Length: 303
Image (cartoon, rainbow, N blue to C red; front, side):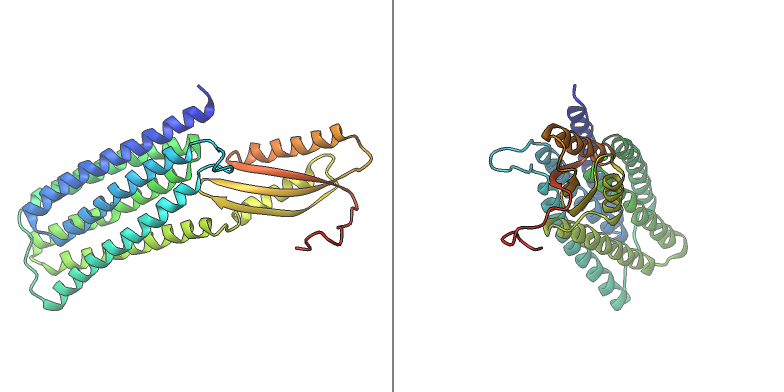
């Protein structure tokens, strides 16, 4: 099995496990909400429901983005990841708004009811934490092997879910041991804020990619260093990059000795491309070769 096929299989396994865990948590937290009536549990339930939707979208994006380039999509299908992420961020923002509104209303009214059957709620949240930790460990292992940004983002998102889950345990304990019903609403409000911040971060990254924002400065600096030090390259210019999902497209003009053969010039360009891909394997690199000292034609674009 090729490396690409192995990576795709691993990425899909992480996506499928993510969906399975999210579905299990939604079912468990629905039961816990019915048992406790806790708004903090409701917040974690909404978070898990969003996780399920995001995991399904991420799985679809992984599968679709893995399709090779074709006649209709010459540069591949990786932008599907950005479209999925942007949609997910909007859904999460709406969910956080509903939770925050309910929490603020309870705090304003000052008549929040104490949750009931707190032990059942705590048990479900602990179960949620254990499942989430297991998922994150597998996702991190897959991400280390495949460098897939969708898996990395999903892993970070689930890791962030541990905070509202721990907050739910605190709220249920405070309600049971101290009789502080308002803690439930405060924790729910904090969870809604975390959801909103995460949604904005995900949405911004997806929007930047869809708008062809350039690669990270560290990557641009790394490509610059590789080109500058590569044997046979006398200079370079017009380094341009753009992101599309998990891929970065790189265009680079290099300056070569114009007196050498076409075969020699091609070998230098191909070698430089391999060097860039060795450091950034998920890049798509196009190199144009110019003779040293060539002047632009008056009809050529000046940008």
